[in-house]
Image 1 (cartoon, rainbow, N blue to C red):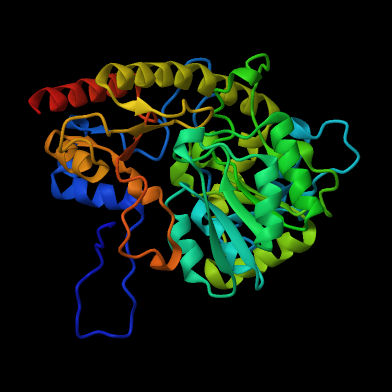
Image 2: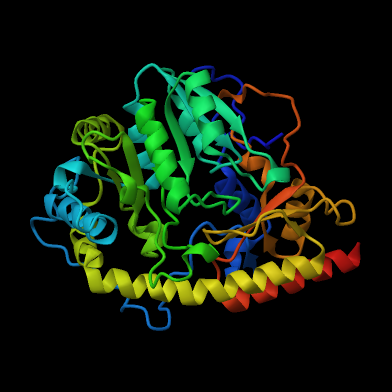
Length: 426
């Protein structure tokens, strides 16, 4: 079971225990082992953010934020209008060129970070069955368990099939379980499984035809490695490309500066969807978070300009593709099985079963890594279980780990060497 790090305060019965999510938990444990005393001595394969410094051929990084009298005031809860329009323009330019139906500022809401954006969407849902996949992003667990207006329905993906899920199966799940909404990350965190092209178009149309909202976490939509898209100069992927009518299709997209622009500390994300749904999402922000930082929103507007976006995308492709190749080869040499090579994200999902004990278990592998100044994320954290409804049952992913090539090339290389040393000791 996932360790629970909530404060032990037995006399206080007024608050429920709230566990830490995957990456936050592993960093809390790393702190106990001295990580924050000297981070440069460590390799953080648990890293959920990309390296944030300049990349070769990338645009100049923003290091100063202008603040004036206007930006010291509250921003609108739905976001600064100019930024909302800039986001709409980005999607129209990148994915909807020449299409009749176009996004406008009214199709966009700005949130203070990705989790906040997801929470707004979930808070705006009605009484319905919401499907989610296993494995998927760790934060979904607490977000889906915090609201009682809907019922989370888990959908199992099988490692033996490369975590595939066909359109036939999608129709069956939506119709058979009466799903009113479906939540997933694409590309998937942690497996890197990517839905793109005709397949993604099929997902959009199936969801529309069966009146099921499709909520897509697209935070890794620039980190695309699928060979079928190699011919594209900028192989970005978004369901926005396949939406027929932006105000009729229930496709809801969440993205932001965190991964695709490599500004995680800015805490700026956005939700894109039909105007009526965006109104509800923005209204949810009025009682959940109050809106995003005004100066950060203003500073984000130039980052949505076409030249900047194209340069950043190409720089990410060049730098991260090399690190992906390095980590995949390193895991192969170390005897860590990669059930599916990531078609997207900056993670590799590894099966540790063939390693010597105790390294063949994700939790033990993580704890042994801390002793060697190495941080990983146990696979069981991605076995999304809202409300702990499967309490007491062993996770299907207890022998898995997620390793990140978000750090620099040098750090990824050093991490591979440290795992090799750990294996040699056992």
